[in-house]
Image (cartoon, rainbow, N blue to C red):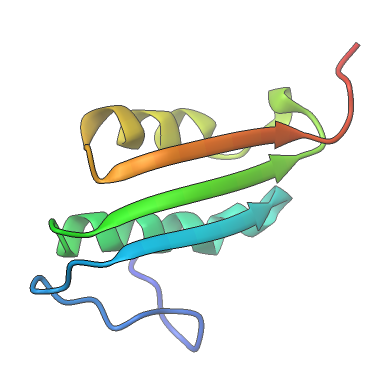
Length: 87
């Protein structure tokens, strides 16, 4: 589903932007929608994502984000951080 409402960007295939987003916990949901849409509509744009969660084992969309990062050179960075130890 493409992003809608006020939390979005006017995407265009002609754009060559570098987007940067920060998300924490379930806040990744709307941000991940923006990432996927930006990379599919704007092949000349790049996306850098910083994402935090309490534990690395509880990251939402982790596999999907890693797949997107590995499948396209446009997702230049996906940085993870955990605020609590899992041990």
